[in-house]
Amino acid sequence: MNTPNWERLRIFKAVLESNSLSGAARQLGVSQPTISRQIRTLEKELGEVLINTTPDGVEITKQGLRLAPLVEDMMRSALQIVSDAVDTVSTPVVRIACGPWVASLIARHVIEMTESPATCQLEIVSSILFADIPRREADIAIRTKKPEKGRMKVRRLPHFNYAVYAAESLVAGRESAFDDRRFSRFEWAMLLPELDHFPTSKWLKAHCNKAPLLRCSTSINLLDAVKSGHVLAILPAFIGDNEHILKRVSSPFIPDHGQIWMVLPDDVGRRPHVRAVADRLVALFADITNST
Image 1: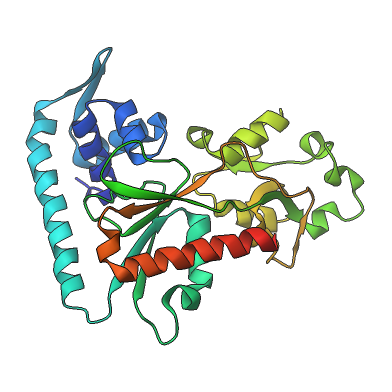
Image 2 (image 1 turned 120 degrees about the vertical axis):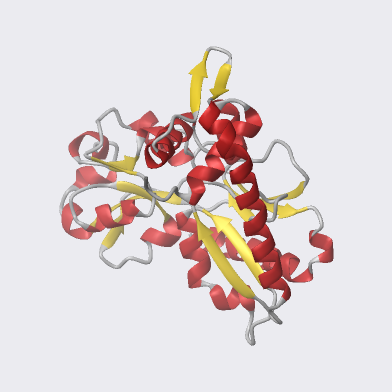
């Protein structure tokens, strides 16, 4: 038996709480196929069947019911460990959960986020899953879907622009890269099919009927693909514009439903270090929007 992945245990717990794959997907902000795939992988790791799908939802097996309280105890213990660790640190820690692009942005602006001398420490958790703010899995979560329920505060962040990018060596002297002919005359890279609900994936599918040459599970892998000099892909302007070997071949745009939300604990007013980092994040996003 392989050691089970922590995030897959979180997914299993969400399925237990919602009693459906679709409910777990909404709770975690990912697609239903992602939930299903991760559960099947967890079952392979454990060597046991945990759930059976039925027309009425999911049916938890005996093995799944036996695992459920153990997962709950693990989550509770992990949160207590984090809480105890924070209490012993003189400099407060702010934990930010976000996607890979935003994680890269924050990491490059760590001094602006923490000030100099540092008033706090940052922990950046980059994942396709969104942290559970009410359970203190993170202090701040940045996500592309507004949460539908839960005790938390939500702030809408300034959007940032995307554009189509290519290696300069690929598009040099090829005018077709700079207009709609790019969709049929060039190879493309995009995210996996189960991530087609992402705004950038929706935008590309609406404009390009050609099957992509490459699909990636993580958005930041698109950057490596474009830099290889063989494919085009959609990147945030703050990422693509900083790569000297890449060229922006489209006008900047904001995909439909491309809103960005910051999720904060409901007691953020009593946590000045979290509130301060949240304010700095808003300013950072505004600067990025204005500069691209």
